[in-house]
Length: 263
Ligand code: ADP
Ligand code: MG
Image 1 (cartoon, rainbow, N blue to C red):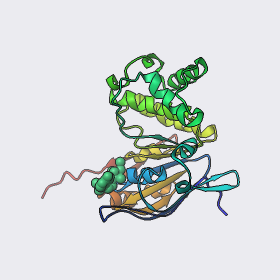
Image 2 (tube, rainbow, N blue to C red; image 1 turned 60 degrees about the vertical axis):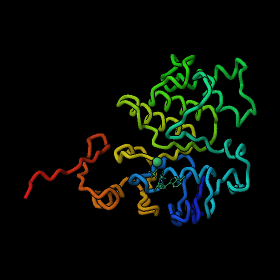
Image 3 (tube, rainbow, N blue to C red; image 1 turned 90 degrees about the horizontal axis):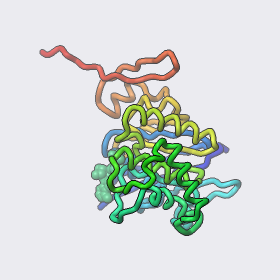
Image 4 (spheres, rainbow, N blue to C red; image 1 turned 135 degrees about the vertical axis):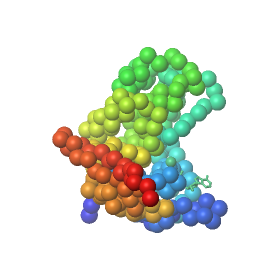
């Protein structure tokens, strides 16, 4: 039996009779980085929301903990938050919380209260430091830029101390330096034994992924290692010609082949 921490079984989602995700099946190994790619509207965010039991879906999401298999539909939201932390793509709050407050919210699932004790404030400060944004601690969250908000939400997810972290397009809105820092951070988190599931629009950002999932029209098109990011497969999902450029350090990127000849 394959050792999984998360297993998606026959997962389907429909909104108002429109089928969005269609019979998705895959497993995620403990201590791995998993990247989901697919065109806009292919169902990536919907898949993450189903994993978080935040929307109605058919099928099952199973989480393995020690020797127990937990069906996410059978536990409370709070129990699930101990197992999975979520970094949404966009997040706005109506109230004037400080950055530190927002990070402290990550403790809620674990401790059952907004931990204002010194100990928790130190944890939150450490988490912000890790993301290189300790200086934003006392700013109003709502005043931050999109990219800064993204980093705060990641700090909040880290403090939650769950085994699995789910991130929806975590690099969107981040500058080049922060994109790079985030990809390295994901590797560090993995080294600490965690399992990461992210969506991304950047095939080259999968260089440190153990498992890649390609979605097309709400269906799982391919799953595997970086080899599935081939120009024919990218053509199949994005409808464009690309060229894979291998870098000396083992990384790679894809450039779009422009056809400049006009008839
Ligand atoms: P992606 O994240 O891959 O861009 P989404 O999962 O956000 O795609 O959306 C997949 C499809 O589901 C899109 O066609 C979108 O319009 C539709 N959709 C998403 N959320 C809702 C909703 N709450 N109600 C109706 N349709 C939705
Ligand atoms: Mg999305």
